[in-house]
Structures are given as C-alpha cells and as structure tokens.
Length: 338
DNA sequence: CTCTGGCA
DNA sequence: TGCCAGAGG
Image (cartoon, rainbow, N blue to C red; front, side, top):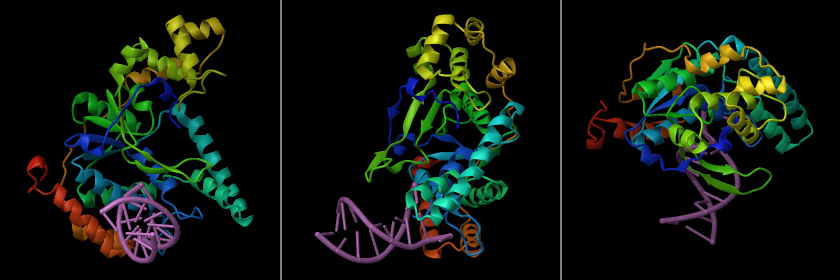
C-alpha cells in the first residue's frame, strides 16, 4: 500500500506532546485500516458487538483520539472520495488479496495454526461504507471534525496543509509527499508497543516527523523528481519498473534527470504517465469544509457506543471525562477550543 | 490498538 | 509503582 520510498527519507522522532496545538489532518482510510487490522482478539477475530458488527475502529477512535486530544493535538479526519481511474488495478488487486486472505484465515483456523490465522485475519481487514459511516458518527459525537475529499484523502490533506488550514498530515504512507505536504507525521495513530515479527519482543514505536523540503535538499532533487522516483518504484497508480527499488530509482532519476528520460533509455513505458504525474501535482481538492472542534456530546457518544454497540459504559464515560477535560474551554493552553 | 486487573 | 497478560465488543 502506498509508495515505498521511506528508506530514502530522514526523520526525527518526537513525542505526541510535541504536536500540542497542531492541527493534524489524519488520513482516515489509512488510520481506520490500521485500527481494523490491529485491534483484534488473539485468534484474529476483530472486536464485534452482539449483532456481529465490527467495532475495532470505534475502539481505536475513542481511545486513541482521546489520548492525542489530551496531548493538545487538534485532529481532523480526511476521508477518501472517488479514486482516480488509474487506481482500479490496485483496488482490484487489494480486493483479490483480501478475499484470498479470508479463505486462508478459515483454513489456518481449522488446522489450528494460530499465528497463520492471525496474519490472514489482519490481511482480510476492509474499510467498508458502514465502517466509514460509523466512524463519522463517532467523530461528530466526540466533537472532532472531518472532511470529505472529492478524490484521494491524502491529496486533500496535503492541500489543507499547503493552504495553512492544517499543520501536518498523519499517515503511515509516504504518498502525502507526492501530493506536496511539507510535513508528515508517522506512527501518530499507531504508536505504542509493537510486536517484532517472529519474536516475542515488543518495541516502543514513537511518532516521527518527516520534512519534505529538508529531504529534497538532502537528496538533491525537486518534488517533481521525487514523484518520478515514486513512479519508478511503483505507486497506487502504476506498477513500477521491474527490479527497481528506492535506491536504484534515486540513482536513475539523478543520472537521467527525469522519468521520461529513464524510460527512453531503457525502452520502457508506464501507462497513463502524464495523467498520473499531473494528478500528483494538481489533484482534485475542495475548499468546502469547516474545521471546528467541539466538546464531546457525551450522551450521543454513550448512546451510540454503549446503546448500539455494546461498549462498557464505565470505560466510555471515563474516556469522555478525559476528552471533555482537554477539549473544554477551561484549559488556558487551549483557548481556541470551545 | 488501549485499558484493566493481578501480581511482584 | 510498574509491568505483564488478557480483555475489550
């Protein structure tokens, strides 16, 4: 998922509290997907209410957003709209691998292979319309704004940062840079402890900030060339050149100057190249949004989570107390909150 | 993922 | 008090 250019980029580790007072545009799809794949029982089943509705994302939003709001962050979720047509192959591939994972999950479970089962359970996570609708409902009740992007969420979020309506984008993907976001925070919605693969060891994962301009200067390229590198490696909209990873791609673009030149020299072709480049540079975005952070509507949250989805009233109330305390007007450091 | 309860 | 394992929905 996303473009694999991370190893080219320098980053600095931060604490969530370093983002105090920052407006952070959260890539909703990315975050919900993380919640759905990570918040699971030991056998791989996601959290569900008594009706069988998946609730992992609701748990993630409630607790994680309460924590970052408590740290002074002003989050705004940015949801995807209609994907560009060049994404259809990627979307088809994702659907296929998800269905494949579902089958393998069942198989592994029947054979009693716990670790396998868990892996395939995670890979079968899907952000569907209900998940999106539920998430928006909870965010609204919690007083956290969201924006509906006309096209890609990361493109809209990057636009909001460039415009000055937000300070940073939070996403695990690097695509935000291709859309021109000056700053990206990783591990904001998934920080905490993470298990090392194959080992029973947990490491602390801290948020990190990546600065676009700093990295372009360091690499000696401009944003257009970063997009070219991404196109060599492969994006959501194209396959990438065979056997070319980020380091080779960097060298190719620095040697030849542009992707067009690289393709010419190698006698290769990338379908829809011009359209994709143009899309990264000026994607469809909107000004039709208003960012306003409210105190949580405790009654709405409780009736939605506890009434409709079987959350424990004790736990929800406790989270709401913390949320109310940090988003309330009584906080001197948070004057802008209402 | 985060929260909680039990135990050193 | 701090850490870990298990639960949460």
